[in-house]
Amino acid sequence: MAVPDSTWLAAQRWFRAKHRPIGSVHEIDRAPIGPGALVVLEVAYVDGGPPDRYLVPLVGSHEPADGDGLWAALVRAIGDGADITAARASFACGRTGSVELDGPLDERRLGVEQSNTSVVIGERLILKLFRLLEPGENPDLEVGAFLTDAGFADTPSVAGSVSYVPSDDEPCAAAMLQELVPATGDAWALMLAALAKDPDAGLRHTASIGTLTAGLHRALASRPDDPAFPARPATAAETAAWRASAERQLAEAVSATDGDAHDRLVAIAPSVTARFADTFDAAAGDAQVTRIHGDYHLGQLLARIDGGFSVIDFEGEPARPLAERRLASSPLRDVAGMLRSLDYAARTAAAGTSFDADGWLTEARAAFLAASGVGPAEAPLVAAFELEKACYEVRYEASNRPGWLWLPIAAVERLAA
Image 1 (spheres, rainbow, N blue to C red):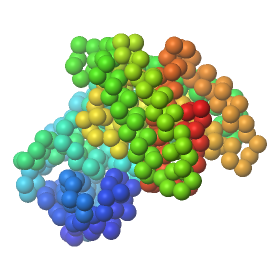
Image 2: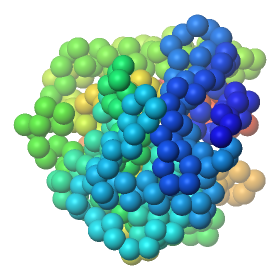
Image 3: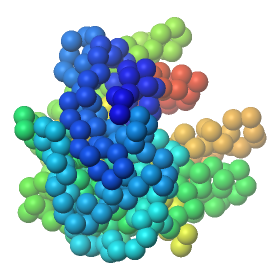
Image 4: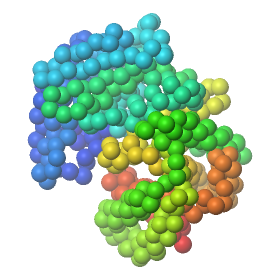
């Protein structure tokens, strides 16, 4: 089986280091399973920085197609709690017992590719493959298992997992198996459809999402004695780290842009920096910290067929280091992320139409914040996190979707005013 080359790898949506030219790609491990193998590739970069390891399943010289049987073989290994022996290490599989695994194992790979790969198994399970093998606890698996155990019903239950266990480092999460939630799509598509036909329905969806958000944060704060899931006031060191993170996002946004976008950011950077300083420096002792979603937006909510929503994808922002994504933070960071997503939806719906994005957003923000339980005293911190998120979006769009760059640039200017 041939190893994929650097051109193929760099073109994959889940390849996260698109800003780093690839120097070489080498296979460092391989574990036979079903009709193919789980292959671990080590990617070295021209800049000489740390290499990355990626998981690439292969059947022959290609990634598995529907019906090949590799994904089903992996689900069976999870159900059996098997260890899959590799050339240099192993893949450890385990199940939680919270979801029934017996039954058909037909495979259907989802067409949407982001930072991972998802495969529907038997129309009742979903297997998520973590492409980037990062040593340490994966927050998507960690938080999902915590919420399953805590009885939070509005996220898919975790059924099992796979870890890559190298001999020279910590285990890395390789896959997670969850129940498949019957859904019509995600909340992003639902919201755009509502804004095109019935903006009042969009407001009702927004209020429902606010209620869901409040419930999610209550569940994440429900076991404060668990050191990995604290619920307490923020320390001065934590709020200083929030300020440093926000300033870093601004600096990276400036560096990622050129031309008019760059000039506009440079012009407002002093006022943005001052806003971060004033807000985050004053937050210690008042702001609360818990574990959070970390990358909360409409695309992270499934629109269930029963009319409710389910939260998915607890990995956090992919550009942040794993250790940072596992840190407790302010739940208002999630609130700000959803507000930015509502802004994206409204601006997208308004393009080329007479839809009043600003008027709708005024009502939507009020409905979401009220349902989330966020009061006026928390508004400055929410605004600071929104501004940080908009800076993050500038960098993301500049690297991945330059045609969308106008949207977060305008948001930074509005939020900084």
